[in-house]
Image 1 (tube, each protein chain N blue to C red):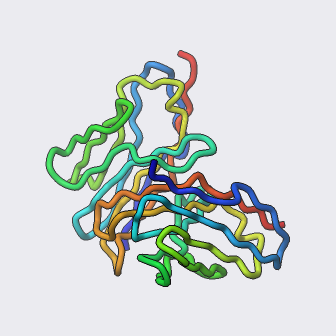
Image 2: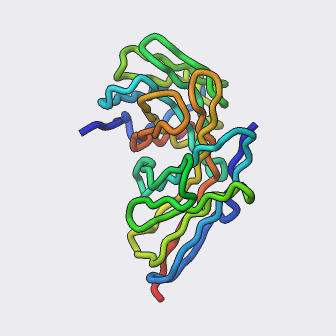
Length: 116
Length: 114
């Protein structure tokens, strides 16, 4: 069975500082990976996705992620955090199963920007 | 604009109560999903459907029924609600079933079972 691990439940980061959110996955097939963001009292929105090609993918709002097959990782990065980035970020694995592609969610990482 | 809407946004019921959560999507998508979100677990799939009248079992189906009445509408039913079903419920839709199809999520329904 597939799994996704986000080891950091909360990350506090100064506004203007860089951010990295860690994600490790376990899946025997070829993974299709997403990062979703959940702003307070809202549903989940797609930040970016990766299936093949350049291991660094660009997303919305200045986010990017890097896929590493050797490390089974898909870490999310942002060069300069803004207070509006306060949200919960989910790493998600899409795996082929049955009639649909099942999404396996990590437990999420809450990002808390603070004044520098 | 394509969207997924859910109602109610908040619901409080008592143990043993009967609850129906509603979801409507205007994306013209074939696939719809119900998830629950609990702290430390991310989102977990309850049921999903690939068209009107179809229902597939997800990863955590116990205590839940679902029905897809039209392409747009997908309902989640809790016939004997229990406190363990207190959670945040999300509905989603997608255009297809292969890997890589993005799922579009509704705003969620917060259910409290007393």
